[in-house]
Length: 331
Image (cartoon, rainbow, N blue to C red; front, side, top):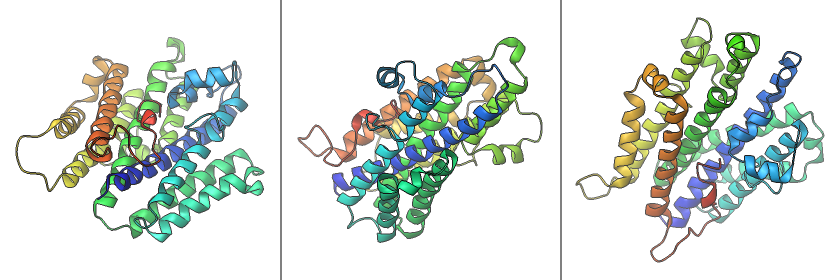
């Protein structure tokens, strides 16, 4: 497979996954703002921290409020990680490799792009409906990809991009609640605290599956364990790392047997760390620090994947429409 094709497939799925995550974050925050008790902090500024774009937001919208947060995350042209820009970049990557992806994949991403770009009726809908339609459009792209793309290298690089982005976003939204939104001691276990944990689960698309696996009271420890260490939930860090490691081994299947290289070592060590560490150990050692270390590992994984598979000999940058500066960290 050509490096530019692998690069485009990887980034198409990262961008679509990023757009779908942001739409869910904003949609849940819209609902949470309506339920917040009077006088409590609204759940808008933490979204900027979760996206990793605080510096850019403060520069574009000094003292910005809820409307500016939504504008910035959904359709601000100056924000390269806004939903509209993510879909535009995914569509441009798809356009360049139309002979590789299926017709159904192209039609879906192209339709979503033009809906966001030119449909006045779409933007006239209530914000919740806009976000729900964006989320469904992204999920439909996943479904079309799963149903029509052969399980060859095209599929593997597509899945790789989706999984790395998903693991990063799960850790970011958890870190915001655990580190940036720690309530005062008297609020722990209160109405607002429980509301924030429920909203966190919904932001990760995890509320129903969590309630099926945990029948008791929602606790921070149980939520963190589910989102980080559950082996069956498809958005948990452990599940994503297992699939990432599996995918990387399949992609490198034709390599000459021997000692594992740097990419395989990092993938295997990261998987082992998140497969054989208990939640009590993570919390006692500092959950924020553990999440920071994981995000650093994801950044390094992206860098190694980029250097091995996407950069042609003698070139410093990939040739497709990707954004190396938008790896895991700026999310």
